[in-house]
Image (cartoon, rainbow, N blue to C red; front, top):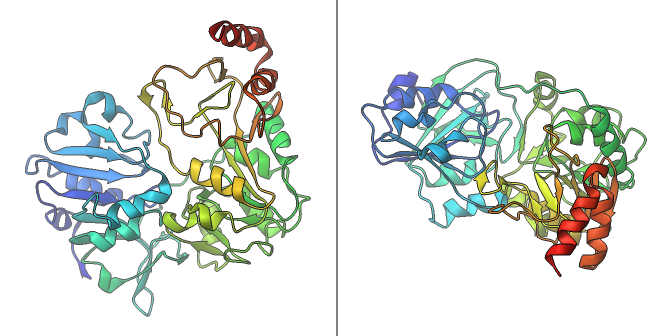
Length: 421
């Protein structure tokens, strides 16, 4: 591993290269900026990644001749690139992304990572994000690391020896931290409904945001919960410290919480630093349905942009306009469904912040179906729980209308009924 400046490291990128960028809070922004600063010299460079945090100067449409963005999950910092023409979206399950590289379907030239400083044995840690970066590094010509003393040390697939890194740029700054937002009254009610479906000794999967935190806030009196999740945030800390989440009843990594990345506040990063309770593995393992289903009573809690009355879940687009991505929702929906005593839950507010209905007779034209109506089990809003498992279309329509906002229920039923006559 050779220490150089960010500007020197950027010179290792050649025109026509494909770059994979370490995701989420591990995004090495000092490296992406240094490469972006070479826009006049470079042509046809592709940046591919899941969602990243911080500025993405390479995503500037004015630099389209130099850089193209290929998102496996679309973050807000690059969402504009699809309409502007300097970005694309590759629909893919999170569990499949590492295989995309190992199968050679997508060749990677350069990988940018952010790691902790090497320990006395020469090992660094990928810290808060493993996802698909290990597989990408296996294929790359050059691995460039931002060495950051603020990166927490985590265990599992996150360990990398310094000899595997070609070039290192030392840059010590706090990694991206998200704020813990307050839980609204509506979200608290949704949290109560979802929590009512969770039994003792369940294994939890949830994402980030106020609804997952609202659910976790209702679990203080549960016992022997496990954590096997694509990602987690601050909501798990108090439950782990109080012993509610102890992972003793899990089958996979018993006694340890497993994830593929995490994103939260500085408190969370301090909590996971050098904490062997947490095990970070790549997404091809964590999100593998065959692995997930081995845990008992897996409860998968995911969200959606809208759900139609037959149970089709759109979680990646607003009509034809891409918003986020497939991610790991289907990995865990199916894994939970096949788990002994498992439950797959889609939780969402019945209306958007702008008051638009989200329980709809039909998905918008062009909307993507991330979870099919054949996979759906429970849908939860602030107006209750719709249990769709084994239900006919007619029964589903009635159940879904009952958890829609009262202002829309009559119109939902009329529009759907009129359309099938």
